Amino acid sequence: MNIVYFMTYGYSIKSWHEAGHLSREMNYFNRFTSKSDTNYIFITYGNKSDYEYSDKFKNSKIIPIYEHLNFSKYKLINLIKSFYIPIILKRLLVEEDIQIIKQNQLLGSWIPIGLKLLLKNLLLLEQGMICIHLAKVLKMDYSKGYCIIF
Image 1 (cartoon, rainbow, N blue to C red):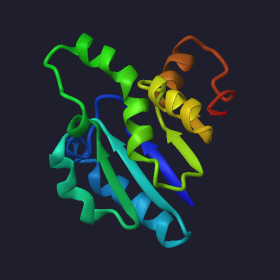
Image 2: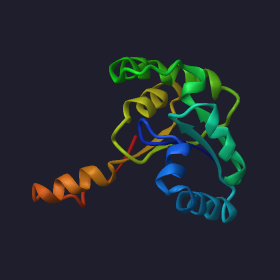
Image 3: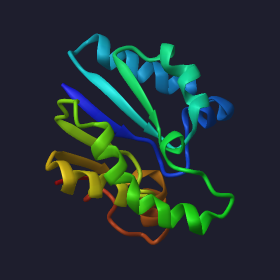
């Protein structure tokens, strides 16, 4: 099974490493791929420097968005450009046999939703810890809607 895994909007594998999360995430993905016939394609919001980490993940491929799209120092420009990312990814993933598109945070979810509409694949979208925390603060029932399946 091939899974396209979107990192949270604005994050890269390098930022995982700098924040001290890389080994935890790497262990999770490597443990899962060793117990199943699963390949991951990581969509990161980094640049070519993310390729330095490709040997740390088994059965995986890394696609850094800002290798294929110019990064701007202005957040608004990057946000506008992000609506073109699904089109770029459709071209890059044409040879892949993708079964699932997965996003763990709502931040940036318009990108995998756009790719899902173009490729017509199953999309798993989790709301992430920010939404769960907000629901707790607002005393809402956060147990429902943790995962959205399209």
